[in-house]
Figure 1 (cartoon, helix red, strand yellow):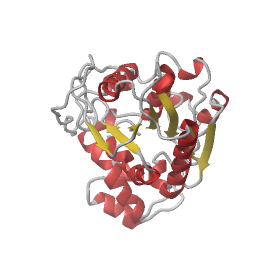
Figure 2 (cartoon, rainbow, N blue to C red; figure 1 turned 60 degrees about the vertical axis):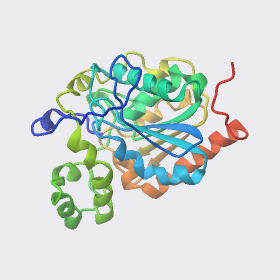
Figure 3 (cartoon, rainbow, N blue to C red; figure 1 turned 90 degrees about the vertical axis):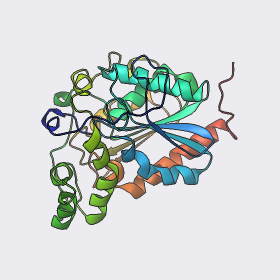
Length: 300
């Protein structure tokens, strides 16, 4: 979610430890919140927040019916320690190891937000035989911030009461620097979904990821991805923009592409209703593609 963490290292506490287990060579403990039963969908958050940032999507996925939702905390964020992870590619491998440990050969859908969207694109191409569909929200498509095509920073509506609400939790600066449409409702959503992860990330540990933020192999350098796809972007997103996602659209022949007005980098916070409608439609396309209840396993 935030591309530079250097200014935030001081005064932050390290990520709490968790007693779970995975089979990754990079981290032996990955915190994953699971909800529901059915076909798996893995939701990957941004940098450096945690799984809370995507829990606002849970109601629409639950209403769609038959989805087992997995919300991992990425290494060095939330309750997952950094372990040996030192790059974005290491994070991809750690997530794949966790998915394998939990899902075996099951097919699954992928949704990623911001940095998590870059990871999701990589996994979708590396494991394309198991991927039912791919969705990204405010996705990172160009890792180098200086090379991105982004709009100028703008606040469409200011609300001192919203900033004051964030200030009461010590989050005024973080909220004000990213909110596009300030309101009490928007500030509450920020405090519920974004602020928890910002408080507990291991900022010292994740500097390795920040310094090796790009993937060695760009996913779109391989064959087109032909499963149902959704790209949700914010028209006022000055962190990653929307043009870089549009630039790779032809690689995804089954993609729906949306640019939401009055939405910045916290797109699901700024435009929750439209985001939910688009995700519900994407899930319907996946169900239609599978033509009936999914067994959860790949045919051999």
